[in-house]
Image (cartoon, rainbow, N blue to C red):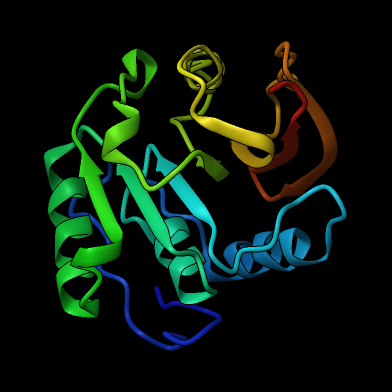
Length: 189
């Protein structure tokens, strides 16, 4: 895996060992960021505050930083995945613009003073078929961690129903192989 765009384009991304993580492919990642770059509903990535939840290797957050994001919070519980994220952050010299949060994403509790502002972009890529993304989105709203108009990319299995969550509007849905990617926007302050 490599970073596919931005100032770190071509840099290798270390993936977690084992089979518990399903990294987003380079091609799918490039498509996601092209969609976000041209979508009227998505804020610009330049200067963005990003959350990469169920982060795995951290590829989505790393890609966002490469494309101009100012900060990324990675949320991951698996030890192998956290080790890969740490290695990627260290190798790319991103310690000053990232933070790794070891917590069950469905029980997310983030102190706002640990961030650099409200999230403008959220990437959620939970294990398929377990309905883990919806509780995360609800926690983000409850804790007032989303900027008005924040863009959310929620990856799920293509056989799963589209999420219906108060405070979010679905703008686009794309299917890539076994994956479905739902692009949403935060509609409430």
